[in-house]
Image (cartoon, rainbow, N blue to C red):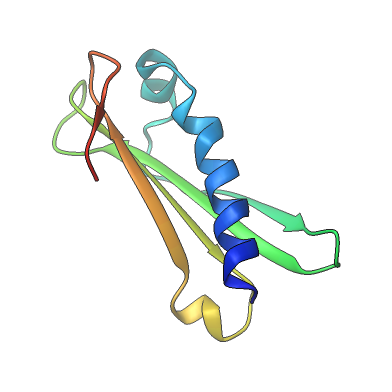
Length: 94
């Protein structure tokens, strides 16, 4: 896996969720992974999963955690990034 390429893909995917309002993330807070496959310009395939869930309790802070792996050795230790959004639509530091 090309780490810089994977981090770029992961950041782009996480930014899609970062741009959503708290009210929209609230509807996605199931704790179930949302998966997709991404193929890069050089035909590398990556699996990306995003999990949106409550930090402690419903209607509280929401954690959005994204993982990326290539189906090989990295699948045992996927790269990940996350953020936490508050009900006030602000971000907590990671």
